[in-house]
Image (cartoon, rainbow, N blue to C red; front, side):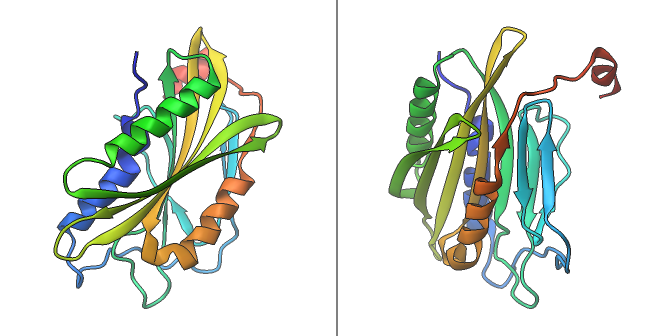
Length: 214
């Protein structure tokens, strides 16, 4: 049974779609971040915590997407608007596969295949692992080009980790960052820090009362 990776890929493919529709003289307008402290994103139901840099703004979640559990965009420096704002999104996906090695390999292969669609030109791809609070996580990095009159290279980075089974169901976390390669000098180090700040801990599932409040 194949893993569901629609939500995992939405960041990169949405960015590619947006780029295809954008004109160079129509940058995405996002308010300036101002001088603010880093924002801690804490998701106790899934035992995940990470820290966004001050220039990143949390986004409201769509009620019809149950897999997307956190979303943020990077605001542009003053007088330097982004063509498309860099994005970091966290997804939780159910999987029938209990083995993390198989999940990691399947997610990597599926993402790589998704960037081989018409209108996209796949580039470099790499994978590595890291230890987060005693748990092994996989880190993937892809580069691909959106073809057209003004081709743009996109960087798509994913941190994947299994989460404890809940109600007999296996889940994995995917923390996905997407940005233009041209923004790598500014955004790359910030994504490094976001990924490095990620912590995994024992989840606290919501109580029946909390479930009813949703």
